[in-house]
Image (cartoon, rainbow, N blue to C red; front, side):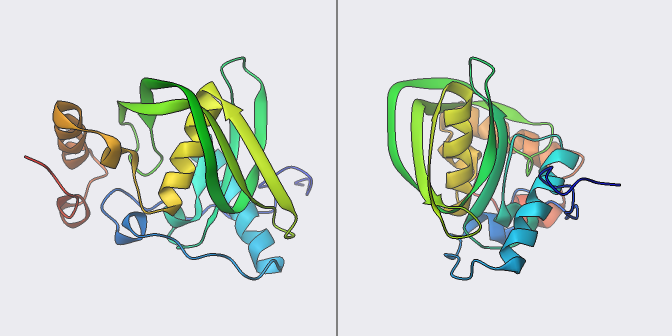
Length: 190
């Protein structure tokens, strides 16, 4: 029997949307109802993220254009950060800008060197409507920026330029999971 205090233990694993799906490329809507449906969505997001072995997941990655994401992510000192943010806003970035490997559950098996700030602060609410402020450094800062980008309709490949972008989009088109329509809809600069 599952224990309800473990995030995702009462959630359902939802199908993942892949690169090119229109829901990944449009800004998400603010959440206005902090109710049981939102609590269940957060549970489903955790269950789906854990099933896919990810460290973060935004609602539009499971097809719902709503501003909420979950995370279970270490920072560079291997401290675990676990939680969720509803209606997140990236309010601060800083530190050095680092190009590091970045992947995405909506582009399974692929990653590319993506530039992100080493520090990030996100403000929003928890699933009951209480204000939250989440600060991260290193890998966790990358996660916060990545998930907030998702909710703004940005996939990490949109941040790539030049040859990195061309190579990443080519790899996505050739991936086993790629269908001809969704990936061909993505903007390719070549």
